[in-house]
Image (cartoon, rainbow, N blue to C red):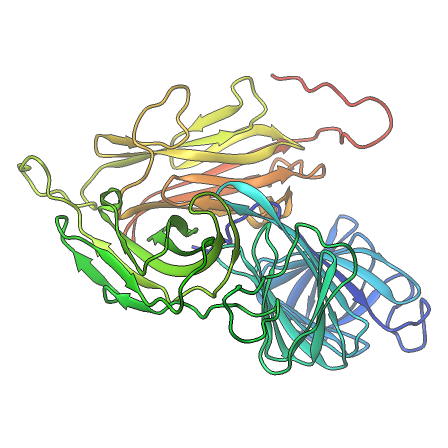
Length: 508
């Protein structure tokens, strides 16, 4: 199954300043009425004026405002005639928003994978402005990157815990966040935590930092008061904690005690903590389970049974509540398993997960009907026209395993158990057309069987022969136990933007 990146409302705005030439200039940086580019490798689709054009290796294309370029299954490398190149990972898209005769172009992208840039000159600016999902809350990531010298190479991506990363492979870049600018040389790396400041790791020459306005709540990482060397806001005050035990991959019986132990590089001040983070197999996000002063933490009995990954980060903040900032890189990630307790009654026959009867009921929420949801059962389900343009596609699945019902978002009243037990998990896949038709970044929680896609654009109405699709698969370990596919249509709806009063929505 295609692995989806968890998140909501992700948008990467890329400003490309090509050469300062007039429209139709002699060097061809801008073709008349558009942006000239060449496909170096791979394949891309250009959507323009309602039509799609496929361009492959060696072909030249001219794109104009409103066009969208989508990378094929193998990704695509594009060459601009000033010598700069862009590599888009599979399914990553670029949309032309605006350009000028002076050589300035503005592109927008959903950063689904890596974006690699080789800038021939300093006239190239990347503005990252995105929202990602953190525990079902949408948080911003915003900063800009401008090459400071010729022949600068860099990479941008968002990892599986929704932190943005920038690495500088060659040259030098200026990174701006809020009212501050840092200069990062080759070998430097920037991590951006949603809703937080920049965390910059610089090797080699010291990076500069200048404030251009009165400082606000937005901040770069700050030095610890106990640092012995002259600190700079761009460095982590502490190294990553070293893990000691239990050994990576350890298994424990239900009645055994699990004590996580790590090295303590230095004494912490009053508002600094070792933050213990756990992630159950199948989950996307790490969960902050405790902040402690010591180098140990006893795993609570509520985490039995299950297989978990764990790591330690030094943070500044309070013992409970949001942290201010991370003061160290994360430690290594190790794992342990806590085996399931024996049953209270001796079963008459041994039943494995592959023998249990399973059933799924899909709930699509925010639908255009009186109940605001549609409950669906079956294998290949045609749900009909259940959404209108402007609606938000999200939902959850009730999972029945044997005689037990697991359901996180119960409706109409609470029933069943919320969390799927190991080794079960539910994974989702959304059709490319649905992802392209929504404003947001799709994702799902495999243990709570929740999913979210985003808000439908006002050009997302579907023809009768081209429905949108959501696939749902229940796994028991590596075995697919149940698979259903839901297709649905979207009705045309007047856009709320424009002259005159907004139409009053009606329910069928």
